View 1 (tube, rainbow, N blue to C red):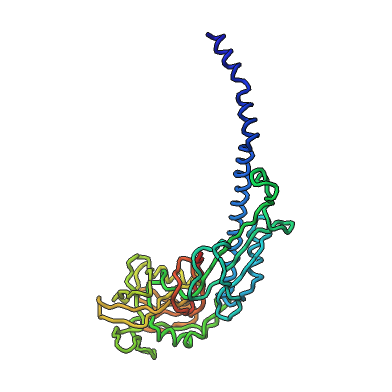
View 2 (tube, rainbow, N blue to C red):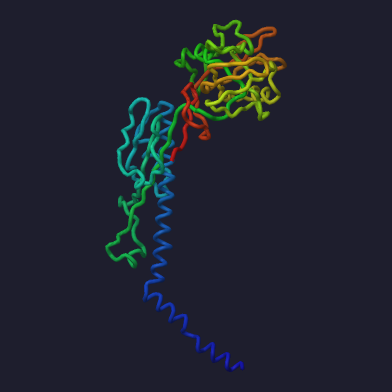
Amino acid sequence: MSRLMSRLRRDDRGAVTMLVALMLGGGLLLGGGALVIDVGQLYNERAQLQNASDAAALALAQACAEGTGCAGSTALNYANLNSNDGTSTVDLVCGVDANGLLDSCPDDDAEAAGCLGERPAEGKFVEVRTSTRQADGSTLLPATFGQVLLGSSYQGRGVAACTRVGWGGPSATYGFGVTISLCEWQTATGGGTTFAPATGTVDASFERVLMLHTTSGTSCSGNPAGWILPGGFGWLADATGACQAYVDLNGVYRGDTGVSASTACKEELADAKTYKTTLLVPVYDGAGGTGHEGYFHLKGFASFVVTGYHLPGLKAATFQNHCRGEEKCLYGYFTTALLPADAVLGGPEMGATAVRVLG
């Protein structure tokens, strides 16, 4: 029996060699190599180009939003820096910005260029398209095994990527659990024309006083005609317990009748003053109801940096104490700020600007 098994094994020798020869003769192994190597190169190049277009579009959108320039060179620099070989072709930079610096986008086959979805019908945005460029200047990925399947005429192929990024006022995002009236914001910012610098030392002349649960000492009634809720400033109902509220401008929000800040709000205010954190403050343009039935209709979001407060059990100031006795107020200045990308676009620009990848 052992001699028989040994002979059978000897008879199988050469079978693998025969199979390999047949596969090579039929191009199967080389065809598999084409799929694994050439397609792998395409996917790797596509990932690099997408990183490059994402970085370029985000950087350009942020520059446009901050007013530091909507220059195509910004997109090219970031595209190259975020490509493994340091080279990418930026085929197109277009969009809509406040100053008309961006070229209008062409009416072409954007999907073929790697773009997803439709361009936004309104609002500000930038579109950046990138494509393959090798270190030697060529625009095709060279064929490694692909010619085995497609013939010598196949010299490789290029890959393209596209990113659209929009910016503007947020319509829905997380905000600090307090709200001020539109009148207060307009008075403090000169109708949205005067903001403290976003960086560097801020002069005391920018400091504003926001009164809590009272309109005394201000020129604002806090409400337009037809809305009645005493006070131009108040706490939003804090459902999260973190002095934060997810605010959608399409809805109305319950107010909190308490005068004292919650423990979470005290901690948030103290940290904001210490670290000069920019708080996103909802601004309301109308209020209704009374007491526990009070509610606010929100207009937009303002960027506010806390410099002090005069609240029950919580008092501090950076420049000077503006409130005395039983008065309750916050001190700080309005500025401009970019928000995290989780904000939804579509609201008015009141100092807070969101930058978001659209596709």
